[in-house]
Length: 287
View 1 (tube, rainbow, N blue to C red):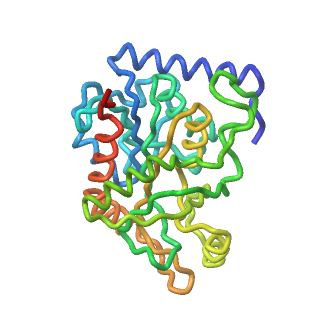
View 2 (view 1 turned 90 degrees about the vertical axis):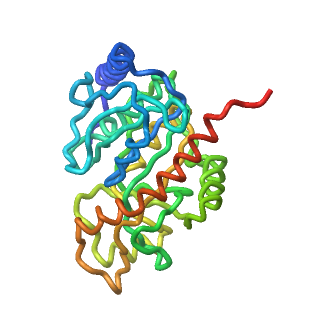
């Protein structure tokens, strides 16, 4: 995949700025909190008091989601009384998009003023202690996608050329998620997310290899978005829903409908945790 030329980089930046301007003109506020809703988890928006709903297709520069379970719209409103922007539908490398295109909405949200990004995804569980429907708080990641959105000319006012990734997932946000899960008696595992391109699922040998190098869950999203967010100084928290058990010695063929059903069944738990985190980070600071 070739790097962007300086002209390409300028065009990308202009597209981000145009999209942000269009959102402002359509009534999109500038919330401090953004949420990316993953496969089968979009109904969190039912809890959101939306003031503006903008289809990706109507926003300049936005890719078009091709995943059936993703709505493809950006919502601005309040969740638990806190202003938020929620992405209902995301983009993936396996759809044919470049890492920069996958990260485009995150760049736009950060340009609008988002400072904290909460992310959910569906993932395969490689830890034998994980079962379908479990929630896994991501502590770190391993990027096996072979590409990332930070290559090419750097936008210095977005972030540094050489981005530190010692803590991609904010420790304070992780502690807050664990606290909210404990308060609600919701089991919340922790683990390392391993990112692949997809769309095919992994072989038994690949699952063994991924487990041996430190992966606990595996999925096809999240990392490009986190890289772009961290590049622009946005704090990140991510939770995976285990939608299938990927144990190489007891591996069944993937059942996509069952995976989506597992994501739906886990949604009330995830919704409760996310609402608790949003409520906490949006609370006024006592003087």
